Image (tube, rainbow, N blue to C red; front, side, top):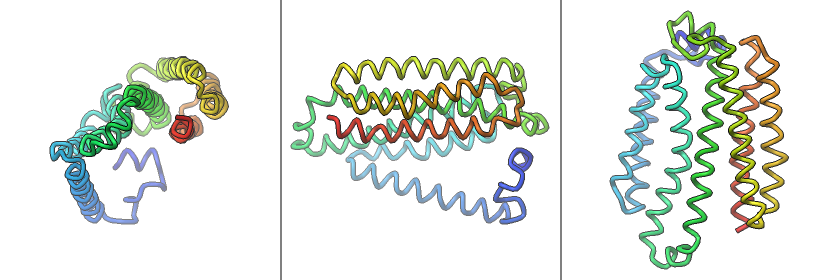
Length: 245
């Protein structure tokens, strides 16, 4: 909380607006409702074990905020992994629901292989974008993190190294997305191909340019917003993939 007060002055909800006690109560209520909703969905999917995913994620986020957030790379990897899991969890529940409906399962069984490829591709995209988004955030919040004793990558290795790693992740994302576009084009998914080219690749290249030219850590707010736009644009492409099947 103290770190957020330094890094996000005036934007922290606990900054003279609501008490810590009320915030904790809201936190516990929301998490409790999330766990109940998760177990309900697990029941509908026919597997109670799936409900255990949600308390595990909540516990991991708590552990992240208390420990891994202060460590170089580990916190970034956890957030990126959880972002990828959002996509994987949806497909996991959908798959179990299909298993419970033999008619629907038979209708889509020949498409499951292709669907799995797309799901894992989107999960990888979410992982990479979240990872370099977290890197950008660490660069921007470097001064506040330093005063709080955090040991993030920009603090340990310096802004220059952090910028190089972030730029490398963006280049990797551009390359892998290019491979995915090649695959889509040769499978006849022309509309998703051009959408990804214009709405995602173009912004990725622009973000790479911003990372290269931006030297001051306090100027990394806009690159961070750009990364969020890339994530949103990538998610919206799912609808184009769906209607192109």
